[in-house]
Length: 99
Length: 478
Image (tube, rainbow over the protein chains, first blue to last red):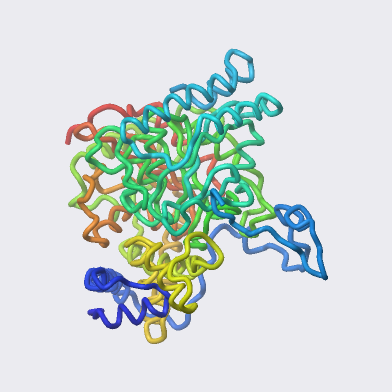
């Protein structure tokens, strides 16, 4: 299947990704090559429905499904000791270096 | 470079101090930077000194006492920035340490620094870093493999004895093979991913590099085990360090015929043939086996991986993390400018491909088919290990030795095919490792051992037997 430039740009917009004008042709060509390669999967016999693959051994799947408190890396009070008007006053998350 | 065990023993017994080790590590890191390896993104003598002080103050009796460990820069650390090799996260500093970092430190390790990688771990050559490509330690014109190329290059160059990387589809085993060291991917769920920046959530694994199997085993033992901060960790004890063994009697090694194609590089084939002969002489039963759906592995991987990447990387929008562009117009402009300018070419390719295969009209043709293929690929491994009595599989890690920089950057599919022997294992979530099995024209060749779920200890034990019997530095001629 050929992916044209316009279709690539439409998909990029769906992904909220700005594509520079000078990169558009190259990206469209690359995506077309990738999609053509993965079309190899058309050679697989079609199955009715699909079981979602669950990675990892059975122990991952057999975890008890119960509601429990979520352990936090740091209690909220460590990060936001101030509580004003019913709201935590928090520092900026992921603060930039040098700011 | 001394081994992990030698350094830890020397520190525990007081023959050297953590400060001595930290100082020497800083000297080697500075020399590697001066030589243009470009393997590090952040390290400093001051932080190394702090690490040594911390070890001296409390944890100098641990398994990794005073061992300097480099960390791939998609694993978060409080003291250093975490950039994922991307401009979009330039200067980002995490408010917490990854669980694996905390566990290394609890065992006495020192964090040596953060290592260069393909942007957001997307790549097979470490040429896709916003901070420049990493050089192969033996040949600066070649790539060290990727995406964990910085960690691999530092271990191979003898700068640190061990390092953490991450695997989504071969990103530790492939560079380990190219650089001539040991790279170990644990089974899915064996090691906590709390603090590993998410890329492909059904595939991602924190993984380890070491100069030897024993070094890799020590690190895996320390970082593995359940973690309340990661619900996908397996409820099983940490991976045990294997006992010494000197034979492979009773071990059945399968050679999947699909991994030894006619066009396999002659030097890689010769090193594999020599290793298979050693496997037999060590007492293993060697069988020809088949993984019939492995021909779909790369295609399956490059549907599932971009689909998951496009979802995971939606969070980098200029609002919650990192750099911001296009401010002051409207929200869509801010999102598109930030992401368009912040992400490099390979990340853009994966996001667009992932969005495409998940979009209405194409979902069944690509994503559903890929899920079906993944079940079949995993089923092939399951059949061999459960029904056909195979203990471990052996394949080449890569179809060629390290390729030249720039050789594949213009052809993304050619780059993806560098992972042809390793990504099926990632799709199946199994443990596997690469060990050096010889050299072809001076460049390392990796041998790839794959094991069943939860048998990392047995896999490491078998690999250690082979490591003793095969000279990984010896030139092998076709």
